[in-house]
Structures are given as C-alpha cells and as structure tokens.
Length: 303
Image (cartoon, rainbow, N blue to C red; front, side):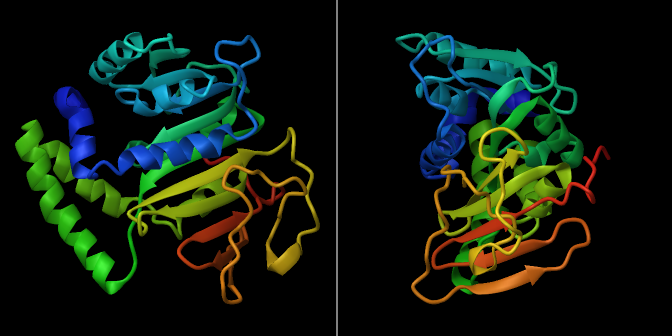
C-alpha cells in the first residue's frame, strides 16, 4: 500500500494538508532538539531516531539543525526516495536511512538522545509494543516528539473536518495517487487512533514521563512530547506542584516551554486511572497535559 503511493507521497502531503504539514514538522523539530543542538557534523552531535521516516522530510529538517539523524522505515520504496533527497542536500546532511521494523528496532538499548515519529504511530500493528521499543532505544532523559492527526472539537470545525476527512481526502488521494486503499486507510486509521485526550495516557503506560500535548491548527494535528526517565532534569518536585500539576519536573523541559497562562483561571480536571493519574489543564487556544508515571505501578506494555 505505502509502496504504491511513494512516488507522489510528498506532493499528496502538501496538497492534502494545504502546506501546513511543514509548519507541524518544524514544531516537532523545535520540541525534540531543545538543548540537543551542536555544530553540524561535530563528533558530539546528538543522535536522533526518526521512526516511520517515509521519504525523509522530518529527517532532513532535523539534520539541518546539526544533529545526526537515523531515519527508519519498513517501506523500501519510501526510503529510496528519501535517500535521493538526502543526496541532493548541500552541504551534506548527517542522515542515514535504514529499513527496519518499528516493533523490533535493530539498535542497542539507550542509543539515541531523541526520537521523532511523524504521522506513523497510528500505522503500527501494536502501538504499545512500538512505544516500548522507542523507550528502549532512547537514552535516559531522551525526548520523544510524536506528530499525529487529531480530532478537532467544536460544532463548526468538527463538521468541516469530518467532511474533509471522510470525503475530500479519500477522493483527492485516490485521484492523485491512483490508490483507493491507501487513502481510505488514512481516514479510518485517524478515526481509530486514540485522540488528544487518550494518547498521553498510552505514553505514560509505556513508561514515558513528563508527557505534554499541544493542539496544532485547531486540533487537526497534535504534538506529543515525552521523556525517558533519568538523565538531566530527572529530579522532581513534590507531587503537589504549583496549580495542582502532577509530577512537574524540577528542571522542566523547554521543548514546548512552560504551560501557557490562560487569561482566565485554568480549570483542573483530575483523571482517575489506577495506572497513571493525570492532571489535565485546559488553557486558551491549546491544552497541555502533564503526566507522571508511577514506576511502582507501571510496566512496559508489550501486547
């Protein structure tokens, strides 16, 4: 399915997102690389895994910031196009691409300082096993940034998005790519994937900590940022942090920055879950989710 649409994959991304996907990827780069930048090609440059890299747009954007990038994808045809794009970059970018199964990554434990996945986690056959593999190959303190389609709320935006997703995307994708299956799958997989209120708890259940989410473009897409426990910034305040935040780090990640202060007092809603209590704060224009994993209660899910 993915091999069949690979020649027009980049064009379809631009057209179907009206070009907004580029700004979403830039936001993911900012999130995962904060504090991990260094000179291009330097021996000490941070290593970042771009999983489900496709044709390499996010891998190239990461490499342009001076880090060493390993792009991994199971689709050989996508990687062929990605390698050709990398070869055209001047000066050469530090990007290597490898064919790999996201559920059995061919890397040792604690290899990467950061990891990204752009619009790929919903395609994993086993979401929890995939998240566990990402956690395994991250170094302690390493960041994960996940871009994924969301489900906008609100009568007007929600209705427009439903029309776009269920009618426009399948028809336009079919006409441009010649593949009915791929873009019918796109619509159904987005609707089946955990939305902005549910996916953060899956990250916590997999063993990640300091989980945050940010809506992009009215919630059409969402950026999730999390960290593997340990390393720099692992020290924590007491569980009852300021304004009721749970597990706020003593040295908070600057990837998304401090939670935005709404003009009106935030409403705190506590989500009762025996595995991973969350405090969810809703702010103006965007919402940020803070999560603290209770290591005594959680084991990495493999099923």
